[in-house]
Amino acid sequence: MIGALRAAVAFLTRLPVGSGPVGDAGLARAGAWFPLVGALVAGVGLAAWWAADWLLGSLAAAVVAVLATVIVTGALHEDGLADTADGLWGGRSPERRLEIMRDSRLGTYGALALAGDLLLRVAVLASAAGGLADAARVLLAGHVLGRAAPLVLAAWLPPARTDGQGQRLGRLGVADAVVAAVTVVVVIVLAGGLWAPVLVAAAAIPVLGLRRAARRRIGGVTGDVLGASAALVNLAVAIAVAALLREDLL
Image (cartoon, rainbow, N blue to C red; front, side):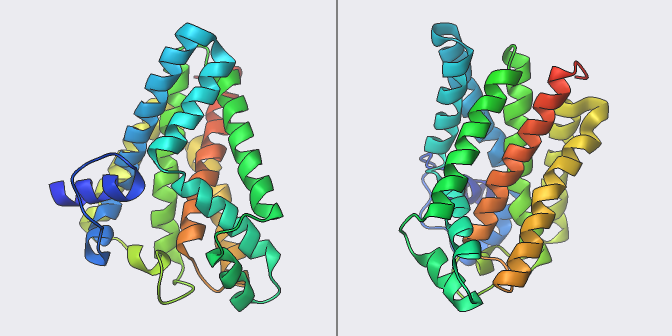
């Protein structure tokens, strides 16, 4: 269990946990802890938000918090989002789309997706975070459900190619799936209360959209698609929490 948790932290963040490269077997077991790592990332963002809000105000605090979560994860999911946008909409055949997604250069679709994601995350957090509790709800729900999204897509679609991250994650075993699900349920209940189903629905929209687009355009998932799902679900859930807060429903 400790080895799997350490592998999850090593794979999803840049935190020094003393683990070497994560092998396929280690990554498969590590998936159970992805949502918990999302809570860890949210904690880093919340600490950054608290310090910056005290010193600089709400808008700067939102910028600092979002940047802190990007830095601590090495922009892993943001890179996947940009590559997915370039690949899925930048090629005329599945082979060409996969080739574009492997290209490290940033294209127009990727730049737009990345800029839109970061700007919206900052705007949502700045508008919703009236205090530490509000910021915690936005960050915690978004990042935890965001890290659960790749687990769902990896179980739902085959890998689009035989190498790369898309085929390494795979379907979780029953025990590992229960661990991930319990983490998600606890967090959405704490963050959303009676409105927890709204957060689940918000997370389902980008997952369903990505599933349909990836299946039709490249025949399955890649590591970039899984990363994009984490980023988009994070944003969608944060928007849902912010909307509930603005309506005084939380």
